[in-house]
Amino acid sequence: MNRLVKIKDSIETVSNLIKAYKRMKKYKLEAGTEKCTREVHEVSQDLVKIIEKVTDINLSYASDFLDLEKQKVLYNLTQLENVYSRYNSIHKRHEQILNEKHDVTFFLRQISLAEEFDLLEHISSPDEPKEIERFQRDGFVCSIIELIERKYSLRQAADLYQFSEKIIKDKIVAVAIQIGRDESGFAYKFNNEFGNDPSDISSLDIESRNSMTTKIPNSILLDSAKRFVAFGKDAEDQYFDLVREEKHHDWYFFDQFTKNIPVLDGEQEVRNCNMKTFDLRKEIPLLALFRMIINFFVDRVSCAMNPSRIFTREMQWVLAIPESWNRSTMRKLFSTSFREAGIDDLIIESEPEVAALFCRYVLLREDAFHPGTKYVLLDFEGDTVDVIVRQVQQGKTLRELLKTNGEAWRSTHVKEAFKQTIIKLVGKPSYLHFCEQNPVDVADMYRDFHLKKKIFSGKGNEFVSIKIPFSLQKTFEKDTGNTIHGVLGQSALSGQMK
Image (cartoon, rainbow, N blue to C red; front, side):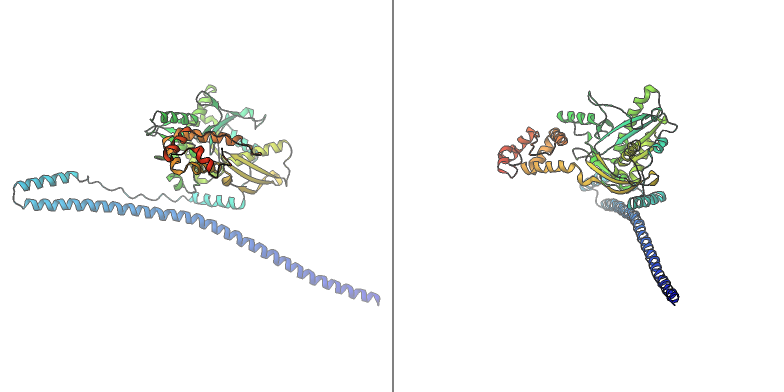
């Protein structure tokens, strides 16, 4: 009897287990399937949005292009109709005069019409409407892939040794050029030295006004015919020499122009982007300025390697650019500029990626790069700080957990705050008069501020001494009849400045 009860209990237990198993298994299957379906739809919708975004950009460009060319056609048509109307008017008046009495008035009116006819513009055919550039299918797809990679952090840092093998294979030397937001420079590494220590590189000094430096500011000076004259500190010094002699008005000077490059997404935006000169009166295409920088560095590298009789085709060229420029359009711009300088073998990497490769090499060497490890990479470049958080995966690949652009941390915001403080003290009219009449003093004031900013510790109540040009004081006194010291004592800044 007891055995029968136990069997019945066991049957009931198994029955309940079957029910529970069916219920739970069904729930888990449904929940898992529902989650998978939901995620598929979410990713699908994200991909559709990305494709729609790239599509809208391309369609907007086509629409804007059509509107612009239509306006040009209408303008040319209006000009032709105006010319036709003027010629027709003179023709009718000429016919009318011929039917009138041939007296003194006739000859005077005929002379007047002849003079008016001579003043009419030459009849010329209007420019043909431009045809829209052929649709770049590869560029369209690359733009979509780039946005997908950013959305889902799909890019993985390459292995340093694989990267190096790619760089130096069949080459005598690898040459790296860095074009940053503030400064640029270059370095090299010979193939036969790489096995010793890949991180031990040789930098190339650049001569600049009786001194040698490895980094130079991205400043360019062109003459009145837009021909390249100087780059870096030399460009700055030569321009301000011209200013002192008042011979600078027809020259083109760009003071660290790379700081002011906007975010450029499309190829047309890059081609149409112009950079204003230091005096804000002239402008030059951004493409032309980059070509000049690249030609400058290619020439310097060629000269440096000439004693060893190493030619450009025997060098592997690497270009490091800021993360904010790491877009397909900007990469294409640099590739084109290097090809025009005679360089076909080029690798382009963003500065954070290059820094990540170096970090990985150091960690591998110290055996500190284990799966699951997370690390933060801070890339301090000029005025920006880019932050990347990565995690080591199995197989020593890297997964990107976070990437931020340090636009809000740019030190130019500090410079802008200093500028606004000066304007608050002397007033905008006096500040603008000072800038217009004393460009050399303006540059010196901001250079001094930049140097003091770099050594400022921020500890305690530390005061920083910044030189205020005498010309600013004179301009303020001339405009207002007051002195800066007198106004400062009565302003809200009196407790912060003295």
